[in-house]
Length: 441
Image (cartoon, rainbow, N blue to C red; front, top):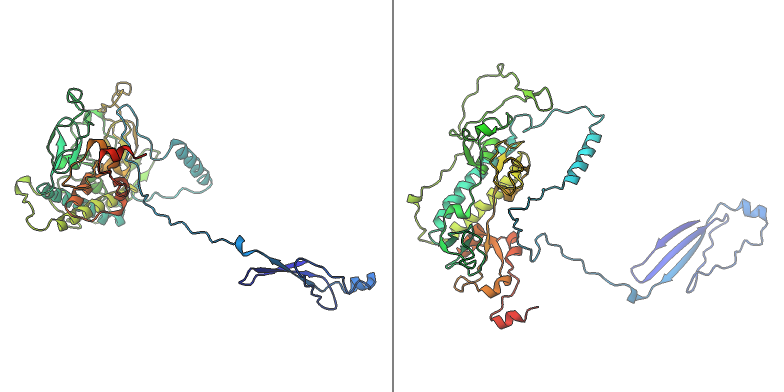
């Protein structure tokens, strides 16, 4: 028995059933439901039924559906950026940072990877694990380095125009003509001041937190011992990441291999023989490297500040996007207890962790995979909706937050990026009076 379905554009759906018959096709048409008429070949014998049992009988079935049963559902519009998002969580000194990927998922992925590699011949390692550079990321490393220099120089100029305040007792900063009145200071003698901040002028280091890391001459070499912690230079972690990705800086030399390494054990390797290769000609940087402008040579912009703010915001986004792309190939480690950063496959052995209960670990760091905010902390500050009107203490729950660099550029006239609107709470109405704020549920 065969079934066929044909539904016209209206509200009628027709089902056709095919039954075996030999002589021809008998079509049975129902009225309101399925009505099977008597078979015209019922008077034939069993021999005839077997003889003519190879054809089909088509029985159309018409089903009428009421129009009100059809309803059109509106497709929801999905947006990657939520309308309002929570502020980034601040972890206390007694709390360990969470892993970017849970440990159970890492173990499960490792077991699956071992099963797939069980009967498969081992493939040669790809860059950068084999000691070579990822050629497609060399230009990205130069862009990140120059974007960082451009960001620092522009922030020094914007500080001459946009007022930024820093607390003299804690690490909190505020972008605006006057400091905010919130009692959130946790520095020394905060109980005497009842949590109020004492605002002073901020510097570039207050906006861009200087995260430093050890400079490695050989990123595949031995781990830094505790006794070597003072003999190895420390440079900004973003600069170290760019150097390992291919940026050539004469002040910080690094080892560049031209042949992949040869593994002789799980953690042991030897360098390939490069004597057959021609002598390497020292080459200059792939792109011209920018330099920081000294503070004494910084001049406040006299003309329109909007182009400077737009350039600063673009440099901020370019640095973060490029650094995130580099971190996918080059390992960056962070301590789970303190903000120590190490650019390399394994963390160093310097016992200089001073976080909570470091005596139980003998000062050793708890290394784990780093995220972008560990390498480039965004430093969230309170968003000022109206520069001419100061923030009110009672309306704290209605204000949003944004990174300090973004807040400076917005107050200077730059366009607001889409990804920061969720934490700035631009869609939240701010009450005009305290009586109106008390009525909000």
